[in-house]
Image (cartoon, helix red, strand yellow):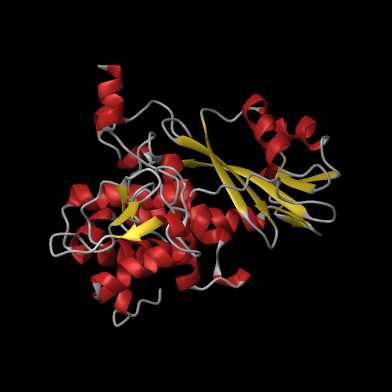
Length: 316
């Protein structure tokens, strides 16, 4: 992870705000209330006016660059948001909320919520199927959760293995991107809709020997499987080593950094690891570019664990 603390966006509040404005508004300020562009927007000035506050001359509403993003209603400074985005984007195996809390000087609760909002900004918007003609996509499942022997006796189940763990399906295009999904269970009925929708049917599909993939594989240009149960891991071009390598990064992050992720939030952690893999250095994306892409992804998204005041009033 590269992290230059001398960069003005991490030390100067005005430079940090201007950094967010340049990424969110490349052609000038845009009103989040009515969509009016820069020619209808005025920067408000005055001794009691906070920096970066704009007035829309079309709808007469004030706004800042935080409004209409995951940072809306946040009292965290722009400098700390810039550091948070950079750390989350550049840390290959993740960044614990406790570490963010210590580094940024905010409460643990604030750091935890901040990290989840950054993960929301990392959520992809492109749902175009991966793969294509002449390309290979590997599919495999894994299970996230602690070992039975490490659990308190009152929480152990009679059976080990995948019991009590959360199932995850990952689709990896060789030399390309990954998409991961939290599954309620691993069956042909839960796997088929995802593979059919998310993988280009002109692709070659590579899986293990699980029978649930036999009928699904017929939907694609070709399907090969390796028999892990017989000690076979590579047969020519047939293997699932790429997706297994991705799982090694995912599990090292969850087990070594986060230690535990809840069922409710597992999908957000998958989004985080997918984002860093999809914007990795091997694809020509630097840490700075990755952080900038995450900041751009914050626009048009909100993440609230309580209803906004407007929604509460509407339902009252």
